Image 1: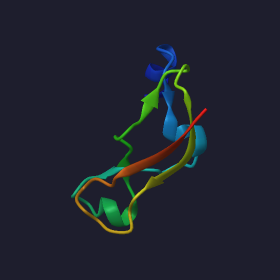
Image 2 (image 1 turned 180 degrees about the vertical axis):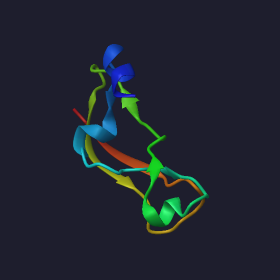
Image 3 (image 1 turned 45 degrees about the vertical axis):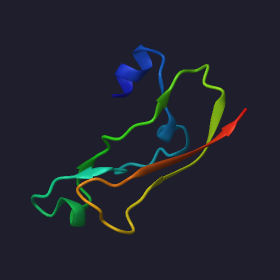
Image 4 (image 1 turned 180 degrees about the horizontal axis):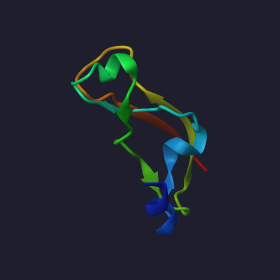
Length: 79
């Protein structure tokens, strides 16, 4: 995904402030993926370099399990 975004000049808002590994928003219902934290980050917020906001915070909401997805919540500040 990084190559696709970089090639086209898009910015991954989440990665602007979180570079930690194993940050997932989806887990398979097989093989105890949730318990083992083996998943994919399939929910993205992307923007162009001209986007008039800066990223303030991010959160993958995992305190309560709603489904095989976890909500990705982003907060932005107008520049």
